[in-house]
Amino acid sequence: MEEKVKKVIEELRLYLQSDGGDMEFVRFDKKSGIVYVRFQGACQGCPISHVTLYQGIEKTLKDKVEGVLGVEAVED
Image 1 (cartoon, rainbow, N blue to C red):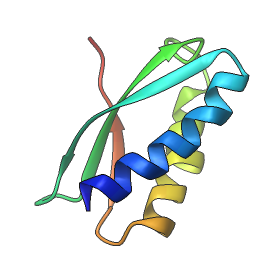
Image 2 (image 1 turned 90 degrees about the vertical axis):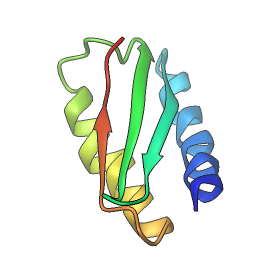
Image 3 (image 1 turned 120 degrees about the vertical axis):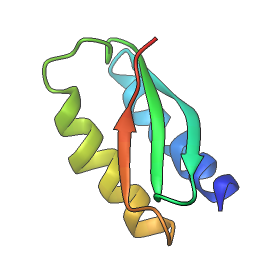
C-alpha cells in the first residue's frame, strides 16, 4: 500500500512543481490510515497550502489508494 501512496504522490508533485512548490513523502501510518508529507519550495508557508493538502492531495489519495483516511503535513 505504501508503494501506491508514493506513486500517487509522485504524480501530484508535478502539479506542485509547476507552481514552484514541491512535497516529499515522509511516511504512511497503516494503523491510522494517515499519510504524512512535507511541503517544500513555494508550498512552505503558503497561506493556502491547507487547501492544496486537503482538497487536492488528500482527496486524490483517498480516491486512488484504499486505506488512506487522511493526510497531514509535517514541518522540519
